[in-house]
Length: 112
Image (cartoon, rainbow, N blue to C red):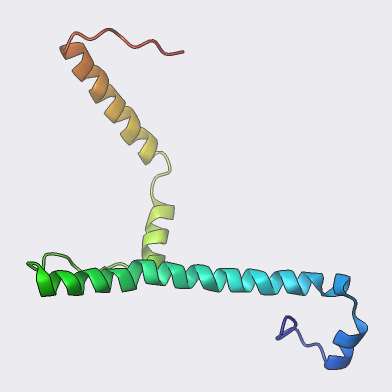
């Protein structure tokens, strides 16, 4: 099963030792790990959204919405965003906090 798709015959596998098969075992495990991650991401994104939307529509007022953006689109959007935008937001929040502290006449914080 580990060498599936790599073009080995049964005789080739019989002649190999475990050390020669190790890269193929690692590749097989990485493939399964990738598949598991995709299924986890799918369930977390789509199935959970469908379940919450259905329950809300049945028992609630139906305010929740099913996801409109795919996993890939949200990852791409996150990757193409300005990398410094998050830092700028944090600095802006810190400046607002400092201004609020000055208005309240709190002592200036010591930054070590």
